[in-house]
Amino acid sequence: MSKRLITVFALVMLTVTGALADDHAELSVTYEVVAQQVEEVKRKDKDLMRLDIGKHASQFRSVIIEWVLDNGLIYGSPTSLNHPFKGYTWLEYQVVKNLPKAGYMYFTHGRISTRDKIDGLFEWQLLEGDTVICNYPCKKAKTKFRGRTWTVWYTPLLPYSDGPWKFCGLPGLVLEAHEAEGKLAFHCKKIEKDTGYGIVLIKQNASPMLRKGSGLLDVYHPERAHELMMLEKYDPEAFFMAMHGELKSLKVVGSGKVYKNGKEMKTYHHTAILYEK
Image (cartoon, rainbow, N blue to C red; front, side):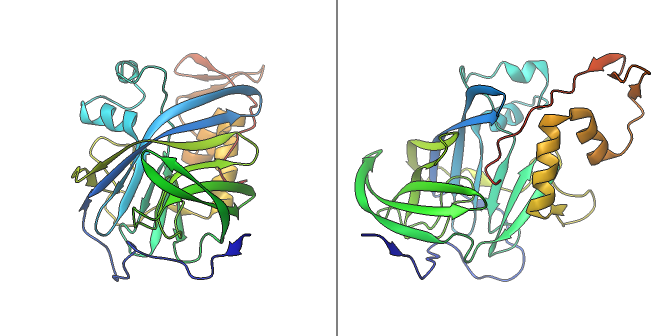
């Protein structure tokens, strides 16, 4: 018999006001993230993403992107493709909770970012059922969030109200999650303690997520972010125009073909599959 979780647990969510300093991980959880990215291509891509949880904040991002940046390579360059994670590709997003401001989470995708208030973001139903994941006994829960239904497994033995992507609000750490259509999933692969990984909102050489010269994020509402990320897969040229305005390197000829630096750009007309509909 299911019951509704009335109180949102905030075991690691502090109520400190103002910006928080950079944090360091006391627990790191690596997930295999499986995602079908567009409706027209049934292939599911896989990434290895790590959740680093510190005393005040947490960060969830691709291990591959971290490797590229730490090795002094330019994200997206030919050399960055030679990463040692064969069979995996990176998913271009990051979620940081409680940094720079406590009580909020920041989602970034390239230059797109959104901010959500953590308290009450998810409304969970606790369900009957249990399993064991990475040697931790887990309980089952379900939620409907922005157009998708998610089923997750969380462990009360790791008392962090956190999880991969935006998941939070349960009395324990989410180790596995999948959405009802079978297009998106998170699977715990490894749990490490006292790793000391840095938790930061911006990293040297990373694609800029902050305006230069300011401490404020370029925050879009979820609806605007959804629109831009749909456009990115449907018409990359239009997406570039929407994000940056008219680029001098772009040239549209009479046939309607678009060229950038003398090379033709393709408009794929793909329908993006997003975590939030």
